[in-house]
Image (tube, rainbow, N blue to C red; front, side, top):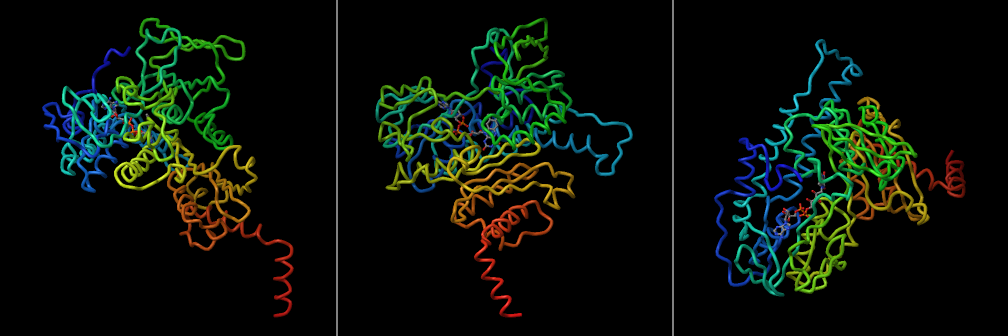
Length: 504
Ligand SMILES: Cc1cc2nc3c(=O)[nH]c(=O)nc-3n(C[C@H](O)[C@H](O)[C@H](O)COP(=O)(O)OP(=O)(O)OC[C@H]3O[C@@H](n4cnc5c(N)ncnc54)[C@H](O)[C@@H]3O)c2cc1C
């Protein structure tokens, strides 16, 4: 579909050549396989890299198979390049809003998109060696570049070589979903796999899908100066999110100029010269938009093709590989982790699961995914971060909720970033069961809640922990204070008053 399909990375500048020299060295020769491996890992993204290096560091004989770019989505076409772009977009918004902070820019400002993308490639190349062939070999992993496929219950084939294993891990990740939209075959679609190849800013951009990735990129391109329209078939923006949180982010994105067409039906694409027309029905009326580029952010599909899973008894469905709570597949010798086997499609979740797999597959551990508190963040401005229960679930489970606006945070007020809020859900004993934070540093702040949940620190106890003033995380302490005030029941108040009266 894309003219550049089949290419590993573009443009071929010094930074991308540097990247490739680590993650897919052009002159690389696969080693001679060992007679048998303790562990063979298919997929060299976050999950595969962590499983392979962790196991090798413990003394296992390990092989890792990757057919495209070591580092997977996260390094090459996901977290790393997207967050580098977001940072530039935040800088652009800072300059745009500088009058709010008492600054004047006399001759206007301009976003140099080529320079933005060069910075993305430069920073990605800087991080790449951590994920590269040399780093893996230094840790004792045999790296095979090629497509892995099960030959039988004890053997994985790659480029005609046979890798015998005692245990195998499938960590083949996901790729962008391409919904069956009429006309889709005729257009050069952008997905996360070729987005970072851009060197020209699209003047008009349609973003299909208003989930985390779609929202992050819609805001980013709008801040760079593209006219952005975000489409979604669901009527709600960020349908999986807390609705109050989504509303705050939507308002901020609208300020950035993003237009929303939500709850649309009957989408079709067509081309007219270099323009792409997106036609939808909205509330019974036809809407046609003309764009230079269309970015597809409509979900992910698992990479399962060609693995020959049937022959080794590994079950799967359209969501991914079927695993039990210990990440074992329906074949006891084969485990799966990361995006291909998880509803939590985040780098840190893939990392945590890969650590579990090492213990469960190679030793006698029984780590369970259900025991993990996995936080997640959306890096829009303001950010959204979560851990534990959220949305309608806390009310359904009979949990209590404390909610405070960032208008209560001196730091947020002073920074001019008081659009945000925190919600903490807790049970009758005061143990935290979940939280949602929306604010400029939400992704950093959520970790305090994760620590409290993992170490069973009650919400009220957080009030005793001193937070530096003025910081946004003080608002977590304020939630603790509020919880303590709720604990002050009429009978406790009466008792305290009785003591005070006695001691007067
Ligand atoms: C645009 C975007 C932004 C993101 N931002 C964030 C973020 O900010 N924070 C966050 O935590 N997460 C983020 N994520 C998610 C994160 O990238 C993934 O959760 C993470 O990459 C999952 O790692 P993985 O190893 O499971 O899969 P992947 O990274 O997909 O790696 C799988 C690897 O397996 C290889 N492979 C597949 N089949 C075979 C085969 N048969 N033989 C050999 N190799 C094979 C693939 O080439 C790939 O390299 C983002 C994702 C995207 C798309």
